[in-house]
Image (cartoon, rainbow, N blue to C red):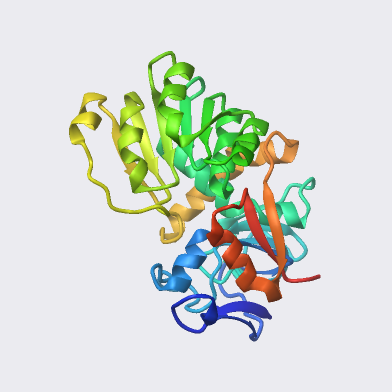
Length: 325
């Protein structure tokens, strides 16, 4: 198989595209043939040495998501068959053209999604759904503020919330980003004036849920715009992970500050997240009500250039690697 590997920690000088023996599925594992693979910020953090893989995950092959065709199954696989198109989550090893994944962490790809679209789904949509619906309990009619609405998770959250009957505000610092937010059916906002927009949309009540994908610098504003009984859900910290928290602001709103990761969860917890996504979001993907956003596709041989593009912060939706047919 061909795989992106890290030869150590650092910048793009540690990245290589390497040939490795094809893995063999054991237990409930599926071996999936991958055409396109998604790059996530966590892959860059792992490259930098800031986000080591959890126990049991490949040490030197990054990648958190899989979409492709099952080509072999382990002896304890119950439902999936060779030839089935699947997508789902791995704790590592996803940037390769052959990937092992637990049967419990996949779902079947709807017929209307081709390989390119399917590759842009798992990490973004499962993370978004788990954050805003399963954990923050966003309800129909509530107001959701998505800080960083144009990336893979942000654009998925906007669409999932809209499909769930919530009103959505999405922030972006660029006009191009705000145009994407508008096209997804949400209200666009520049981070500099987001507080006023939240007040206008909510008739002064505030945001019931804030999905924080940017990080610590936003927390003061998040608390300021929060509705009574509101929830701030932190999933991304690209702009910083340490902040001074005004507990009185949170107490005054009887609010909750939540935070989550998906990669390092136990097998059962991750399976629950996948099944919840399958029940609530997959039908919308199948009908076209929600859609994955693909920013750019790079040949696997240009993985370093692809990483630079992700790191630049200008992408909208997912950046994919093409491992060829």
